[in-house]
Image (cartoon, rainbow, N blue to C red):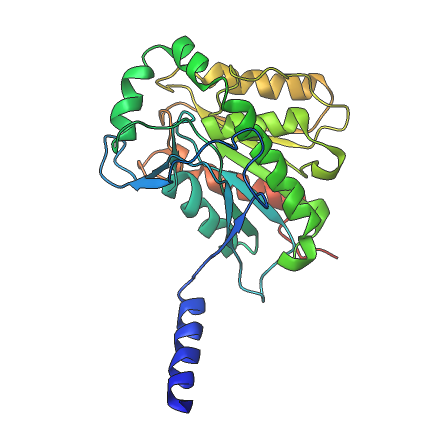
Length: 295
């Protein structure tokens, strides 16, 4: 029996060192507004996006990526992957970002927010034809977008409210999102509660056409924006508008608009200057004092 306990102990230590991650349900029960959703979350690793995606999310969660305690600085980031509110690009716009941030001492939380239900086991094949008509896609996504933004708000509130549990400073919790995840991040920036005000917000090649609130709050947090001019979906002007709106309101903002990179570059390597966007984001966090240890 003692030997068995030793084996279990070593397995536990190995799992911890291998990077086993804690998954936190966002809500105690059914997510408000989608109580009748009963489909199961799934993954697709082989699809036309050539990256792993998660789909049919009905029970939102946060997956925690903790930094080494020796380098932890008390800053936290909620990460919202993109996927047109039909899928979540969980690696290049989620886990890969979280690992990069954790290496910088930041506690990262990858958010799986609610998305439109897919009817087949190839959600990307379902989605691609819909992307030819953004207005029709907006109409289909319309009931889900407010739920996804609510998930973003709840995520910030949860991490701020339980900051001590995760070893972070509640005043150093920000949010970053990509494409549709950028919609979520921007939506949070436009509609946060006092308990859920993010310390900073970073919509990356965000789609803001689905937002119904676009007034910059009086106490808006600093904004970081990145996109590519050759975005195939034509979203680059949406990023510049976010930046212009922030500076017009007298709020801090930084914009990186790359000549080439397309839509959805995330953490993909294309041997282009856009590959360095994450370094620029890290420099910006450092400029704000968020990569040094919190007092």
